[in-house]
Image (tube, rainbow, N blue to C red):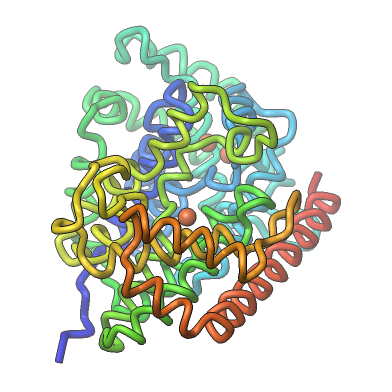
Length: 429
Ligand SMILES: [Fe+2]
Ligand SMILES: [Fe+2]
Ligand SMILES: [Fe+2]
């Protein structure tokens, strides 16, 4: 019986997500890691508890995940963005769907609220956590860091800008803490270091949090929302792939534990899309060659993000080989049949089946005849596994219904998310 303790560290997972999100805008560098690092240092100086620091760290590492488009992300580089509410609320709504992250969701929700000499302690009838103000400060320090000049020469300018807003934008005690740690050169060198993630990991060792397999499924669901909610066009895709893959896994004799792993792999198979701006994902006309290169790279990013997790080898290989084909024509590795494990073959069939049958805002899903014809052609071309596709044909109706139900539920959730987002943005413009 396989162990149900996976011992996957939560910070490592979050760091992998942050890294991939930051790929969307190289101009921003490792913004999420920088904010996590600075927030943690401020938390240390302010003598926060381990729990509070852990919350700051996770929230800092994910604070801008609600900014889905490249334009939104670049706008956030500007000092005090004009419309900071929407991405904060979107990020907090998504984070809040994973129970252990509800405190972090609150921190993210208010991470652009100015202090206004105390008025920023509340917004509407909600109290704004102090951690939100710390992240705000860390964020506004991070956006001023230029990669084009030596960091130590920038410290005075950064501190002056922040000091000028002491009380008005930032909590006075937080600014004082910043000015104190700002005298330590290593803090700045850490912040711009290529190894910032390693440095952070060393810091968080004592606050290690591990996830069970059930926890990991829930966490993967959160990431799945993050990936799919980038665009209305993909809002339910990974859920459809998961529903299909789990059914195929059951039919081929995967254990319960392995089925959980394949479910996780399906939720994460398009993880690399976090690095693709929604402008490209949503483009209705044919992609330009350059856009297509960017789009294709998403599978590689999925692989790079998951590969380091020793405990997640199966998830990583199944999820990141979903575009490989048995005859070697797939990408990014061009592997041949012998190198493609059953889990990866299941993922490929589940992905194609879902892509063909799902409705998109601009087109209806294919009917069974056309779907069957496409799948058969792919088997004939030695792209997809014949046995698996035969299983799809044999169980077509049940399989399609389960996929459809899962995607309808996900679509409902997406519309509910949009409605709440819209309402909250009106209340907190
Ligand atoms: Fe932000
Ligand atoms: Fe930010
Ligand atoms: Fe996919």
